[in-house]
Image (cartoon, rainbow over all chains, first blue to last red; front, side, top):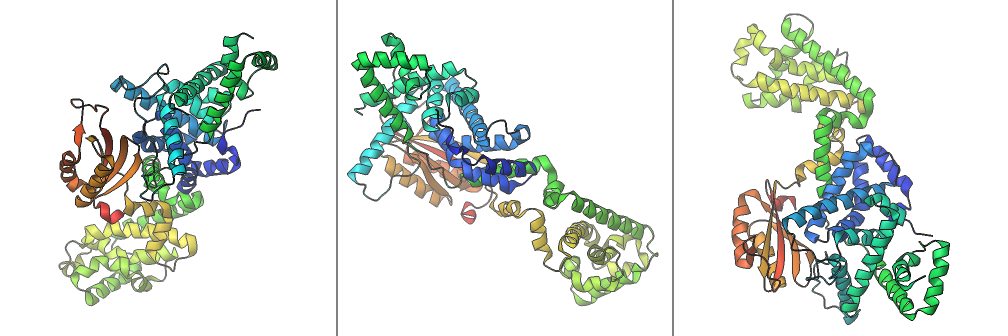
Length: 202
Length: 335
């Protein structure tokens, strides 16, 4: 049926590290940070859609995880728990941004974002790129622009399903939504991206 | 299944998340509806494109920053004592505490009854050694550096390493009450208050070391072990900015602005990294020393128009987000 989250291949290792963290072992926590940072950073970047915040969000997420370790009893995989923390932080940050700058967001009804959105974390290389690389880069930028153009409530479902590959049930648990809602939002979000890509000639 | 319902179900159908009945009905409709078939194809392509997006590379400093903050948290929560001794378990903590109490008790006993006990000659001897061999300023350091030789006179110690060291430090602590030696104290007026805390620290070091491996190596290295080497490595780094300032610059040429920020950072004694760029937007982190923060901020208006509530981006020009992290102490040193 549905694929599970990407980083659940070795839950035992995470569980062992989490247990060590509870004993105050900072190295174990550092191992968790190094293992999950790219995923958390990507998640923060995709859900918040504001690259300037992704680094800070990631830091906040790990600090919150460290604080909350005492209350984490392994009901879900550590990676899923971390995802929940990250998504919730990103949601709150977005809410704050919205109340401060309500004019900024584009709605799903107008899925083409005004700006391309923030993109690659890697600075543009000085080495001349091949045509193919440029094209791929363009597609990626366009896609990221389309994801950024979605309303946050739709974007988070899309990111968790199509980029993080969580199941509908897991997404429901992470976001606190009924599975039916997840299904409906995902359908609309995918439609939005599809339309957006079409408008961009893809 | 009617057309609208079919369209709504296409996404779930792709994920295999429809009921068997829905599946049959939907597939029937697909047979008859070329529009839905095309849409399903498009949707499948969109999803496969999304899945190919992959992860975004986090900035290289991210883990270091996270751990710096976590260490700060851990320090606040658990206190110095637990950080020092947690790696060794409770038995050792108990042993260390016992040694500490024994030694402290002994010190108090000694200062209360200066004439009592067999250690008096030892104390006197070490004091004489210090006074005879070293210039006055060197005396307070004596217990730290010369522990080995000075510890020798009191070889009768009950608690070997700790007691051996401790007797050396006894004289300064007991000094005020030992009037017969008052003449000797005169050249070192500052000795007692400084030596006492140092003695305590040394005792704690000595005791944990003693139980751990029976002593022998450099005390400093042992202490590093005790603090957990990861934590102690972070101390010289101190990578937590004391302040974070955000500025948005409206610029005509993004690449040129990035170069200018880098050079402005360099000229202000700091460093700058690009963490993201697009066609019309970029994000940079600039790390700068507190003293030179103002200098850097003054350079920004020359690079681009600083945006605020009064001057919002028009959408025409590129926007460069600059996050300025202000650090205590030299940024260059830490790089």
